[in-house]
Length: 311
Image (cartoon, rainbow, N blue to C red; front, side):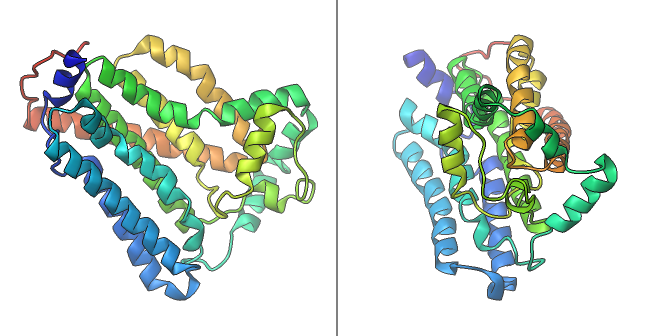
């Protein structure tokens, strides 16, 4: 335990000062606040939105306070490192409150017209034609993998003593998440389960994961489909693992990420277009972060760690 603690506090940024990921979170919250103010007449339940933004700031403040007060505490360090990931859920839940500020309506008609022109119809209907309870259960399980893919690589990197990589991994995840959230405002879409007549009012037959996921989706924020956050974040996680040189982990995770990617359309939650847009977000995040990280390594070499990172 002492080894883990020393590895956590060995490098800079462990003292509660603003890091790139903190600036990213604050920047996104500022964007949301500006959008809400400029389009206040289209914001629903503004008090709830204010509470969410205040809660995001409070999350940072508490984590920063604890790590300053208990700098040698492994628990405080873990909270400081991982708190941004919790905000993905917290801020996601209130997207519905301001998603229509820019357009005032959902743009599913445009997506349906585009997919009809490209694919000759709804690609989601193809998946529906092969649906069965066993396959549906597998797909729902794949859809549920998002949060493990977001969190577990960061935790494993920390336990391996690779704090710098863990911080960069978390930044990549948060950049992918906030990019998709901004995308929801720029192009609000409900998704096929709300607009394709064959799907409206019905659900897929399955077992444990099917019932669990479909129940959770009843309260999912409207307009949070394009680009797919599931695909964007999952592939950003996978590409980060590959970039950091963990080839075996990349090969192990690849089939699960592919399953998740297919599942979003099979499960009727997203259009196929949402998946491609999510992939574009993930690869853009990977390319940008690789450049930024390389530049940061050149300009500010890492301080000598107390516990050497494993390569």
